[in-house]
Length: 115
Image (cartoon, helix red, strand yellow):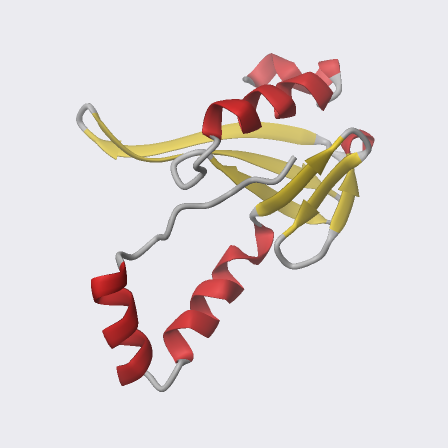
């Protein structure tokens, strides 16, 4: 299953920033998103940076939410493994509910207690 992301910055802001920064803003944004999950499959996940981690390699899962009063600005699952941290950004995912259901289905049951 592919995790499709919404654009973080609207196009009317993104393109002028990209042009004025000589293309550095898009490169920096791609670098920041390297730990986001791109694909989730029955064997594990693949990040946007190309790292592959199996479901049984994860050691801890936490849910991080950030916001102001009732407004939720960010909502994501942070998965820790010996290979590094991985994130499922529900606040940016177009298919957030489907991605969350897939994550809960394949995560080891010992890690589901914190969700």
